[in-house]
Amino acid sequence: MGNGTNLGRVRGLGSANEGAHHWWQQRVTAAANLFLMLWFLLAIAQAPGYDFDSIRLWLSSAWVAIPLLLLIASVFYHFRLGLQVVIEDYQHGENRVALMLLLNFFTVAAAGVAIFSILKIAFTGVPK
Image 1 (tube, rainbow, N blue to C red):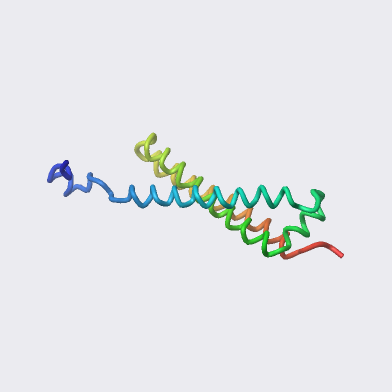
Image 2 (image 1 turned 90 degrees about the vertical axis):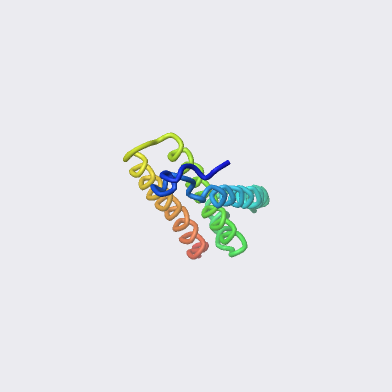
């Protein structure tokens, strides 16, 4: 197995040497998602009630808000990594760049809204 032709190496058409790093990031986020989602399901099952005020009180605890924020960050990063692979494999040309930009903006915006919502509830607490 060689490294391609000399001309290909000069033009930068060979391996970008990023595949293993991307692969590891996907595996690490998948493992984090597994553990954090398991925590989330158990925490929801043990919640004192499912009305708005009970969930608001439950979410105001740091023991709930912090793992939930980590879950949101991990899920959205894993989502971005997976769709990046799909875009890189199946889209070509200038369309690829536009889709990657759109993916990045969407992921950051959606994660930002989710994180803001959690923080707003966590810091507001239960009304008196």
